Amino acid sequence: MAAGRYQMRNDNKFKVGLFGANCSSGRAINNLPERWRADWESCETMATLADDAGFDFLLPIGRWKGYGGPSNFHGSTFETVTWATGLLARTKKLTVFGTIHAPMFNPLVAAKMMVTADHVGRGRFALNIVVGWNEPEFQMFGAQQREHGDRYDYADEWISVIKRMWSEEKPFDFDSQYLHMRGVISEPKLYEDNAPFIMNAGSSDVGRAFAMRHCHGFFTSFREMDVDRSAAFVRDFKAEAKKLGRDVDVYTQGHVVCRPTRREAEEYFHHFTTEGADFEAVEEILRLKDITRANTPDYDARRKQVPLMNIGYPIVGSPDDVAEKLARIHGAGLSGIAFSLVHYVKELPLLADELLPRLERLGLRS
Ligand SMILES: Cc1cc2nc3c(=O)[nH]c(=O)nc-3n(C[C@H](O)[C@H](O)[C@H](O)COP(=O)(O)O)c2cc1C
Image (cartoon, rainbow, N blue to C red; front, side, top):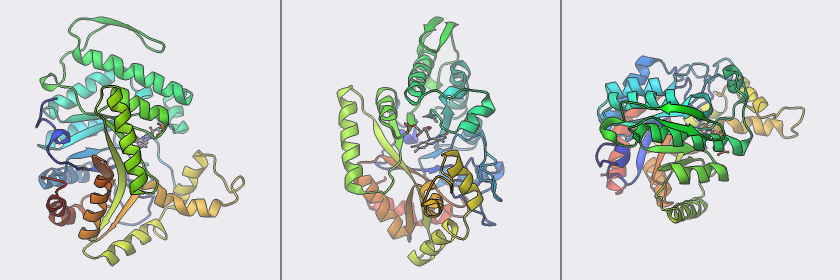
C-alpha cells in the first residue's frame, strides 16, 4: 500500500477519527435542542474542519432505520459510501470510510461504488465491513438474516470476490456456497491500483477471525476500558494474526466530551446521558434485543444504562484529561479510536486547538 496515500498509513502512531456523523444524533440518544441533525451542510462543515485540523479519518455508521422516540434517534441517516464520496470530493487528506453491510450490497455493485469513491478521493476511501444484526433493517430489505457464523461465511465470500474484481484483468467465474457469478470483470481498478484500508466491525470470535484473515484493522468495543485487559486482548489478537502472516491493527470506539474545564465536561456528559436522553428510543433499542419490562427484573437499571453503553468508552474532561485518556488507550496497544461528539461542528474547534497539539506533545502524533 503506497505510503502517504492514506491518513490511515501516515506516521501518526495513534489515529483519531470521528464516528457516526452520518446519522441524526450521532451516537448520543438525546433530546437536546442542539442535537446533531446530520444534514449535508453540517457534515460538509465537519469534514472540512476535521481535514484542516489534521484528523485522520471519518467513520460512518451503517444504519437504515431509526429507533423512534421524540428525537427519532437515527431516523435520518446518509448511506455511507455516497456520503463518503461527497466528503472525499470536499477534503484533501482525510481518509473517509464507507460502512457496508455485506449482506445488503451485491458485491459487484459494492466493488464499483467503492472504486468510484476511491477515485473521487484520489485513493482516500476505506472500507468498514459490517455483517448486521438489526432485524427490522433486514426486513426493510426483504432479506433473511443468516445464522451468526453463516453471516461471516457470506462476508468471507463477499470480500474475496470483491478483492478479485479489484485486481483481476480478465473475466472470471466465482462459484462458492452463496455466490455464483459468471464472467465477472470490473474496471476501472482502484485509484493507482492500491487496495483500500479494510476493517471489520465486530466483537465475536468469528468476527475477530474474519478480521484476521481479510482486514487491516479490527474495529471493536471494550465495555470498560480496563487498560490491562485491553492490552492483553490486543497482544493476543496481533500475535494470532502474525501466525497467519498478517499484520492487523486494533481500533476502538468511544465518545468525547471535552470542555475547557473537567467540571463543565462532566456536567454536560451527565446531562445528555440522563435528563437529556431520549428514553423512548432507548426502550425501542431494548425491545429489539428482546429486553422488556415484562421479561427483565432489573429493566429500569438496564434502561438507564443504554445512553451510556451506546456511546462506548466515555472520554470526558478537560483537554489534558482527554489527551491523557487517549494516551492510555494507545498504551494498551490500540492503533486508533473513532469517537463521536454530541455536536460534531461546535465541538471540533476545541479539539483542533487544544487536544491534537497535546497528543503531539505526548508523542502519539507527529
Ligand atoms: C465497533 C463496532 C461498530 C459497529 N458498527 C455497526 C454499524 O455501523 N452498523 C451495523 O449495523 N452494525 C454495526 N456493528 C455491529 C456488527 O455489524 C455486528 O453485527 C455485530 O458486532 C455482531 O458481529 P459480531 O458477532 O462479530 O460481534 C458494529 C459493531 C462494533 C463492535
